Image 1 (cartoon, one colour):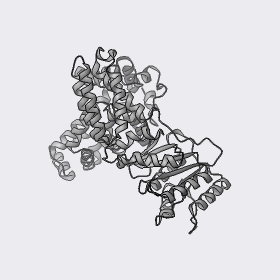
Image 2 (cartoon, one colour):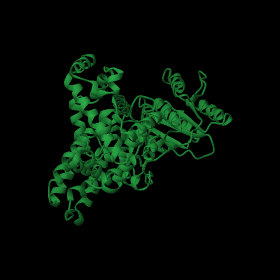
Image 3 (cartoon, one colour):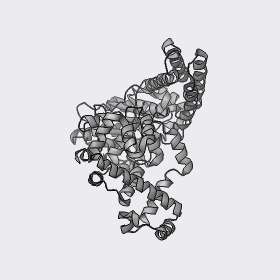
Image 4 (cartoon, helix red, strand yellow):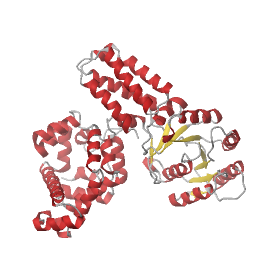
Length: 507
């Protein structure tokens, strides 16, 4: 969603980085371009103006103009200002009250309230991201839209969350009363109220929403906003916050190609945190909104923490343990390579992963030009065209077999050669890891010499130099500590995916 803004800002900062010293005029010119980029991304004018004024004030201070790398310093100031604009910290739902905790969803028609209600209910009842599981009840108060209540009931069945039985002809206030009573009697922890969509000019519906809020006394009133709304999102937020005390915002369709201005304006206008972002149509496509990570993605700094968390959610434990055993022995066949490719597809494909890696923005564009995630599917097709024997012993694949595999997978012999070469390199790396003393030896190397040490061992000085630059010279944060600290990640870093702790125990 932030691609165009990201590209524009990237261009501005590349020009700044290329200069040895910065004058005040340089900074002001760059900030003018940043302002235009923000306005083009649909950020509300007052928000863009405040942002640029704040950044310019800090960026033309003496310490920046005379610092060794003024370009980097300006990027850091913009990064910090973006985080402040998006809201300093990630914010969870506050449900620590005597059950049932009531969460009320409000928003315009068609902004995705019903689907978001089910997504949040699934997240709470599944105990996602380390929270304890909650017993959730959903109730639809939407009597205006045809089949709205049936839609929530269907979604409830899909995500295995209870919904309040429908009684035709009941009004929203009566339904809210009945839902509260049912939640108390049946011992539910959380009650989710999905209200009817409304236009922000429709006073009758606004009054109805206030009446429901007075009866239900919700702990959380979440405003659901479509990220594609653009400038008007500000008016929506203002009119809703005048009627009911909002506690947070949920942005839907963050996976779309909108210009992202709504997300950047929301926090500044309402003063309320963005709590979740809907990133797809599936019921598990809802992410907690982390301002720092989003700011990193906008500026092309990557989002390694989310990458590790996504890996932790998608990696199957048995696969990880089996892989650990094979890596300890220095083995790696085509079946393992196929498992790795499927893993990447489950995590969102090459594009999604490249977008989260620091400095990989340009690589992501190159990937898209080369066919993006189709590459993974093509590789998978080649492996499935091999016989079971060829998969376990790729060295059997001679010229004749390559032609057969290429025809069977609808690819060329060159594609088959590329895949075999990739497998060979990974297999060689596994053998070298075994020589280093298994994964434990590799981790301690990361602890001592950063990523460069590993690069030197696996692919010679050139690779060492390249990995050193990628990791900022001192290795990736946390991985060094993992080597030195006997498999423990420092506080604040996400835990290793399930099953991967075994990698550290194998010799």
